[in-house]
Image 1 (cartoon, each protein chain N blue to C red):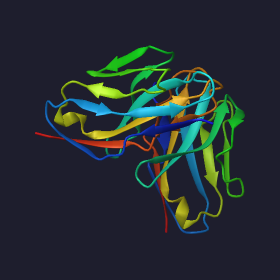
Image 2: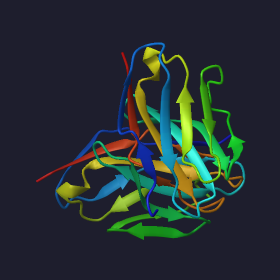
Image 3: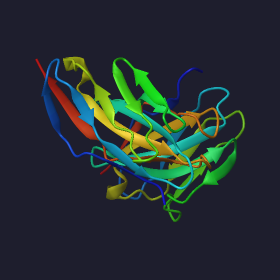
Image 4: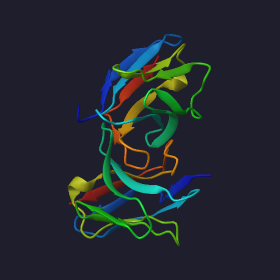
Length: 112
Length: 113
């Protein structure tokens, strides 16, 4: 079946620290992979995506690389800001496209 | 439009009453998804559509939940005889193609009292 496992939070970092949020997946076939971010009281916003192995998605200083050999899509950012405080969700869409599978979310708080 | 529009933003229903939620997908998007967010973070899949056809309904509690996406109308999610455990935020999303990202609406917060 299809599933996404991401690291438990909450994560608290100081401003300018390095961020890694781990995400691994199980899927039949070759899924597309995504990171979404949710700010309080809002819907999910797409942060970045990758549709095939070795693709690197990047946006606003965040990066993630689609690793087929380790079935992973870890999110990284070199220097976090207070405005990055939010909940981050790793997700996959299976090749048939009928649904998205989400991880349980990782809450990030960045302190000045 | 350029964003997924969900209405209403908030809905309060007494237990046993009906609730109806609406979603206007982004123009040109063929796929619509409904998710229920409970316990702050968990996203539970309910149903998806490809145009007006049900694509996957494996997440729907069929005895009380129903959904439609008709041409030239907003999609809808209806809950007959709401229960306390239906209290959640319901998100709608749309995507253009079968393997692309989905864009999410701001959600409808349903409170059953």
